[in-house]
Image 1 (cartoon, rainbow over the protein chains, first blue to last red):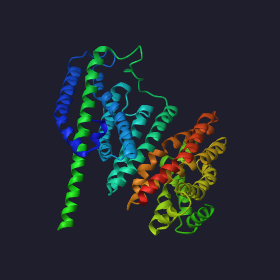
Image 2: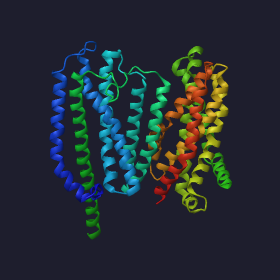
Image 3: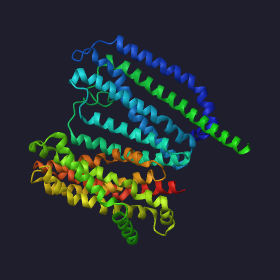
Image 4: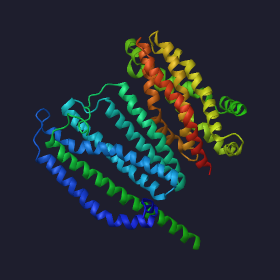
Length: 243
Length: 218
């Protein structure tokens, strides 16, 4: 049994249907535990007060927004190289989740920024590059929706994802150069001395795990839906031919 | 290749008025901005480099959907695809023709519009230089967007949505060169980055555009 067997839609569906209930439960458990722990059982920050607690939504969603694009890049590459339909459909299924995560990160960031920086929005490199990422997601989804032939759509969006990734990274460093930031630096790095305090760190880890599990569950579920939708289309086309 | 270049340029100049349109649009943007922000010369000279860059970018965008869609409709794109010339070459030539008919006039017109917007004197050289360096990248990136949307009925709006995020790094560095030039600061770093983006796009993007065109012509 190799990893590529999941490229078979039937095997993929059978396996994901068995895994999904566990994933839903695990995601819900992590999110509930992490958020309740984070919101009610951590002390207020001595400078930021209770506003710091939005970190439990802001940081995981921001991490997922970037990682979902990376996942789409990988599945697009797999589609281009090995032409597994499930891979292309997984990329399609992930994109709207990515849009939602980017939006959550932007909105929670604005809500956090208002009391802390005194402004909802600043043209800070991180904020700006997230807005650009949001536009890339929009373009990607719009291209999927615009093309009728599924194989053509998968090919075109895969190439767009590749080219878009290069330009997204380029934009990330270009905006760094363009303006200095208000946003704080990374405080979750594994290799740094000075990080976020442990009381905030552990519930945050649980929340991140919850977001990852939620994303995996959503993508498997949505990919299954896409596979079924395509089967339905094929069935209906066959019926029309016979009738 | 040269024949194709001549044909595309002749078509762009003679048919349908697409040639002057981008230039006229650029002029109108430069005229509208003072109405929008007020006639204060100090303010205008501060925002002039950015306005001219954004205007040039939008003017480039305007003529993109004509680049491949017209040839797609009358079938000459299929002929070009079966011709001995590789599709990468076709796309590059088309982008070059687009640059000569759209980008180059914008570069030449920019100093005149700079006068309208009260651009500071040291800025002219850098504005023209940054536009001359940056607009080829806009044409090549635009060719990629045009190739993506060529088969679509209403591709125009989608084309803008796809291409504008890709334009962002070029705009950032191009406008930065023009702004620093206008303020008399050192321009070397953004200028080199802009040249790098253009060189990279010109070298690599035609392959992506040709791959996408092949999918669309399948």
